[in-house]
Length: 232
Image (cartoon, rainbow, N blue to C red; front, top):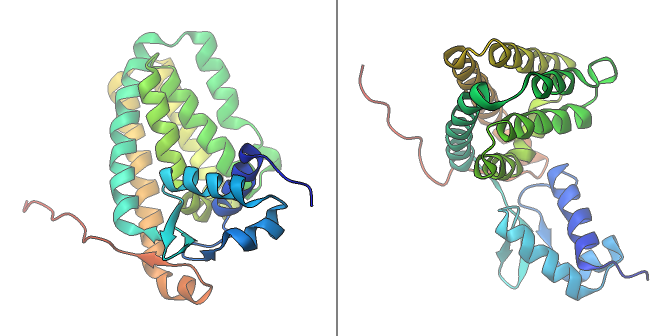
């Protein structure tokens, strides 16, 4: 057996979880992963602990499992992501150069003509992290990267169709255009609308398909009810 180091075991296991090769709720054993990953138990245990810190794995008795998809967590992370990105895009209007915005526009369009689910997920994440970096605030960029990691499995469900991927790319271009015009209000409004649309589509899909997805082995839970809405 060729023994992978900790970083390699972590990268392979993380990719398998994010792509739903290992589905939410699936039991994982260190011994079983030894043969699957071609790694010894020590780097596998370290990789599982690192993924636990990212919310992608959790302990289950003496073993491990892939963390279930938690609808309450999805809502909370989407709120956090929206707050980060609205703040970041407002700063980007003031701080980004025209050259940087031209590069961001290219990033929003890349792979449109040879699009697939993997590139749609990756390009979308790259766009949002790049946009927050234009705020010149590294904490906002790091926060966005962490939020997208938490949402990766559910975002994978959203990029299933060419129509959904094209819609996301069009909305990204609209955001870039508003920032290029130095219109902070419009840019913030478009970012908020994009986040709301993504959240509603993800939660709607998961709610409607909860039973069917469970039949495929995906564990979807609701750890807390949705926050109450104020009466209008």
